[in-house]
Image 1: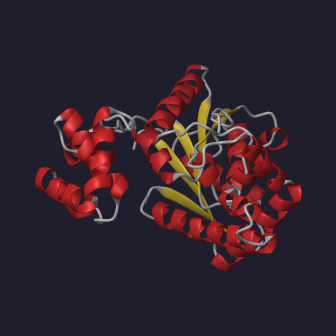
Image 2 (image 1 turned 30 degrees about the horizontal axis):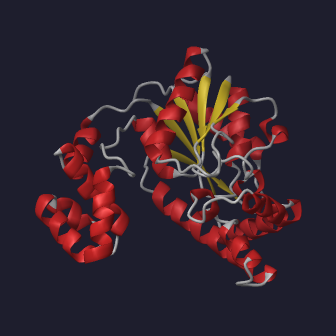
Length: 315
């Protein structure tokens, strides 16, 4: 493996990635790039656990609060903007520290993966949407089975979003999404990455910390943050309003549940999300895992991470 030019800090929600990212940035003369699909939105600091000025502790952070909540960013758009930040950090002679829990976005950024053509709001997509409304997903899935059997085999017949996307790519580019993905995977990685993973040895400790953090978010003003978004009259389907901690409190404001029920639902969804994050990350065998006991010992974790990174040639 060539000497890494980026350091990645990964792990499930509430595991301490923000603090570890700052510590590593100070140790290795770096700047942080947030790799989180929701921290990009302005006005959502509490609910997304975006780093505050105090938590940044003087370390430059990028890709935080850069988007209007009315916008819906694709992974392709995020990757393009985040890559520009990484290149600028390297040009300054600094070390990019990529911090975040959105695994797909991080993988795309590190690999330099390109995305198949196709416009989500283009004429082809609109035509497919009309057919979906008129015919249902069955005929479209059958069509996909004929033009891209490998994609059809991967997808569940009820996965309307990905079925439409696969057909859109084929009809706009003349190449199947399977062909595009295979070509992309053969390309060399854009960045050599060293991965530091944070997780609790006992999952029960992780779940307890997540529950405590949700309570802290509520006490810090999460509900008021939700109210501010609602007062801006965001479109109902906005990606920002689908974030954990927001959609549940919107349901409360709409009278669909009590405040206590909303809080418990946020905790449940956060725990489930953390489990999915861990499942995704376990596929990456390059991650050097640091396991927390009951309490998070950042001084020891920084020492362990430094020894690992130094062994890879980072000084």
